[in-house]
Structures are given as C-alpha cells and as structure tokens.
Image (tube, rainbow, N blue to C red; front, top):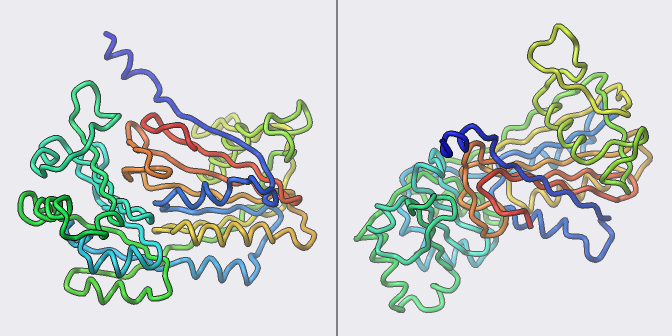
Length: 361
C-alpha cells in the first residue's frame, strides 16, 4: 500500500527564485549560466515588440553550429590527441542522445574536462572502473556514476590509472554511443575533420520567431519577488504564466474552454504585441551569456516593455544539471532557469528542477 501511495503522489518540483542587479559585484548570473552545460532550448519574450532588432536577430542566427557523431567509441574521448585538440583549447560539451537517463547508459563531457558516465549495474561491473551508486537508483543500487577527470589524466598518460581506463574502454567493455557535440572555439571546422572517419554531421539550431497579439502580461515590481497585493504579481505566479505562454495556452479561462482553465494573474496589463523567439539545438553557455548581455542592452534606449525574459531548458536525459550534480528523470527530467530582466538592470533569476535533482546552486 505504501508503494501504491507513492506512485499516486505528484512528484516533487523545486523552484528557487532570487533577485539582484547585473551591475552588482556579487551578482551570480554569469556563474549560473556558465555551469548549466547542456542546453537544448533557449527562448526569450519581449512585450510591446513586433520586430526584433537586426543586431538581436543576427545574434540568434549565429548561435550554432553543433555536431552529431554516430557510433563513436568512448575511448576516442580519452586519447591524448583529443584532449589536446578540444579539451585544452576552447570549451567542449558532449552528450549522448537517443538515450534515456533512467533506462540506458548515458555519457556527458563537461567543458571543465570531466567525463561523466551513468551506467546500469551490469555495464558498470563489466567496465571494472571505480564509481559510486546513483543517488536515485533506489534501495538496491541498479545505476552507478563514474567521473573521469581528463585534464588530470593528460598529465601522465603512462600512469596506471590511464592505462586501466584505456584498457576498459578499448578491450574489457568497449562502449559506443551517438553523441551531440558543441565546441566554443575559433577553429570549429576542426570538428568535422577530426571525426571524419565516423558519421559526423553539422547542424544549425532551429529558430522560431512569432508575434503574440493582445498578450495579457502580469504587472511586476523588480524589488519584490513576493509581489504586492493588488499592485504586483509574485515570482511563482509569473513563472506559471510564462509556461502557459510558451505552451500557447489560452489565458482567459473562458467557460467553453475544456483544455485550459488558466488565466493571467492579477494585476495585469495587455501588450498589443510581444515577440517570442525560440532556439532549439545544442546551445553552449557562452552563446547564452552573449544573448543575455544583448537583452540587457535592449533597454539602453527607452522602451515600452517593462521587462524581458530569457528562458533556458536543459536536456532531460543529461547525467548532470548544474555543475557536476547528478540529474535524474523520474517523471519529467526538467531542469531549467529563467531571467526576468528589468529596465533598471535589476533581474529575477528563477531555477526549477524535478524530483531527482539537488537544490539548484
């Protein structure tokens, strides 16, 4: 009965909100963006805007590229040549795709050179490598996490540790995966030539631009996350509203609407038009920081919009969310963050995770 009750319970979700100013010395916005490595969707919403500026539109169109490589042997990621070419030069992120974090073996390479493996029990034991049980595998450990520091390995390629890992990946338990890779470096063409003996393809992120007419927008006060009765909405109400906008849900709570009974929180105003832009692919934190900075400059000239938003969603099946903290799927796999940028350079930062995640940093 206890198991049945747990299955019927709604999964725990966590939303952390904070406010600051981009000009403050202790503002954490840059660190939070830089340590959320595997991002698949970036969206921004600008009220009272019908057409993006050329500078902002050009920036969106230049976010890519990223790459997909099929059946790439895992041992290719620990070679001396690979580490020198990609890990020590620029910032490389990689992630297995077409894999489910709660069912399959998954691998992620972080920009700091950490290789993270999330393996089922049988595969873990066959590798012969040392790891630790997953925090989310239940009482019986059926999933294990292995972390390999490639920068540390590269210091001594004749070490016993490196030889053991290389032997494991090449001979004892050869593993192959389909990978997505993104590299922040001036020599991006190197990626195609380096993996030319494998099935590698270059991709450009998909960009979707739309104009939302007569959009009801919550009234906000940058100084108050909790909102003010009859004066301003709170951060949670705004976060729910933004999700409804991204889902293209009706916000009127009309009696005949059986799909959505949601309505925009009070107080609110109506924006004659709002620009919604969504970029889908494999987007690096460096690109997101540039986009965030450009959105901050949106208010350099007087605008009708009181605020703009930037929302970033991570891959649901990534082994990590922020930094090297383990991420699990459970019932959703969500890990995302949202900036609300105000005209005075104040901002709200909203970070959300699901049941199988630590509290966001």
